[in-house]
Length: 266
Image 1 (cartoon, rainbow, N blue to C red):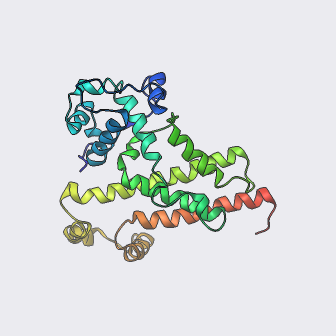
Image 2: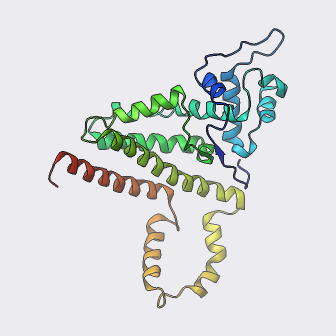
Image 3: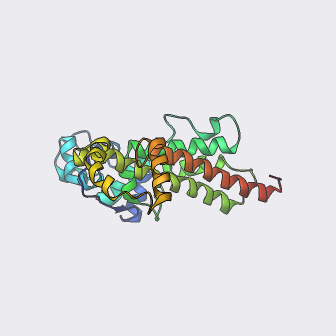
C-alpha cells in the first residue's frame, strides 16, 4: 500500500554508459562463487515488486536486498545504484504492455481501433504499476523494451496520412492522455485506504454542510450540471468515464487531422 507522501523520480539520472549497459545487458556479471544466485533480472523483478507494493518512496537498494534475502552491498555487483535500477525497471515493465491484450496490429479494423488498443494497454499498464506515474520521463529510457514498444505503436498508425513528426506526436498525445487519467484513477483508488473512508461515507458525512452552502439560485449551472454528472457517474468523479469520454474525443481530433492530410471530406 502506498504511503501518503508521493515521490517524483526522473529517468535518465544515472550514469549513461552504465544504464545502457544494464538495459542492453552488454556487461552483466555472473554470480560469484558462494554468493546467492543473483542477476540483474532477479534484482529488477524484486525492485518492481517493492515499487508495486510501496511506491517509489518505498524503493531503496536496502529494501530490494531485504526482499531477495541478501546483503545490500551484494546488489552493487550487478547494479551501480538506484537511478540505473529505475531505468531498467521502467524498460522491463514497458516490455509487458501488450502481454494481456496483444499488440495493436492484432486488432481488426483500422487505425482508430489500433489506437484504442494502444490506449487501453497503456491504461492497464499504469494500473498494474502505479509507480510509473511517479516517474518523469522527459529524458527517455533508451532500452530494448521501450524502443520496441515505441516502434510497435508507431507501426499501428504508419501509412494513414500523417507525417513522421505527426505520428510521433499522436503516440505522445495518446500516452500522455492515458497517464493523466490513470493518475486520477490511482488517486481515487488510494483515497479510501488512506482516509479510512469510502466515497459514500465521505459524502454522507459532508451532506449536512453541503446542503447549507448549496445555492441553486446563485449557482444554477453548477447545481444542474453537478447533479446530472453525479447521478450519471455515481459520484463527483469517475476516472473510467473520463478515460472513455476523453479517448473518443481524442480520436475524433486525430481523425479530423487525418481527413485534412488526406483530403477526405467529412
